[in-house]
Length: 280
Image 1: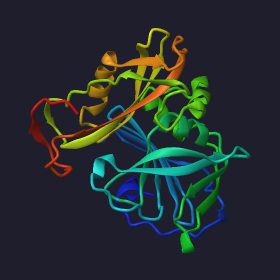
Image 2 (image 1 turned 45 degrees about the vertical axis):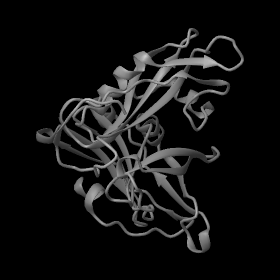
Image 3 (image 1 turned 90 degrees about the vertical axis):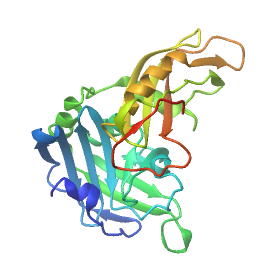
Image 4 (image 1 turned 180 degrees about the vertical axis):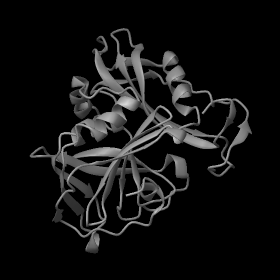
């Protein structure tokens, strides 16, 4: 399978609750001229899974999904999918929808890739996507991938094992632990220079007892070369957390997502333009 299939091909619509046999192993495509390493596999129900590192940005894509509704702002379009592995319960995870609305980009791709590399039974639930408004459930048997996915993670400097992944399950929809809120949200400056008119970045940090953020890492950004990850990472220095109960902020992982738009009147574009510096 060509890597371009993940992004550009119109993928077949899958049927609900049909188990599919996995391929022998994940395929690996390396394109040095594009600084791109992609691990990918597909199933005969049309579902495509890919983990890729491009120019230092790591992404996990799920393709072949029912088309997501059109969004007013393409770059801030968000879709929740239910994900589970093995006998674990299904949990909601956030995904970004790109120009091809049958493809979803994980907001926490390295954690998801580490789960996928173990192989085994994976479920993907799309709420209301089946006939009559029922949930559409994909059940696939993933082949283990201790080579292809490992190379994609390694190309972006992401660890193959991270015990902090377990902390993500305890976070709320806002990416914060219970009873923790923002005293001051990070103030984001739009990256200067030649880049895209819209995009997003997801950063994870360690909340410290005094409310400051430390050990921040860019989990993913889109587009990959727009400078949005670096801008979001820089903004975390100004963010402060507070415990609603008046106590100290626990030493735990938090997730911070920020969306970027050049201005309210401009449409998202895959072309590059010169922008002024401005707050989000």
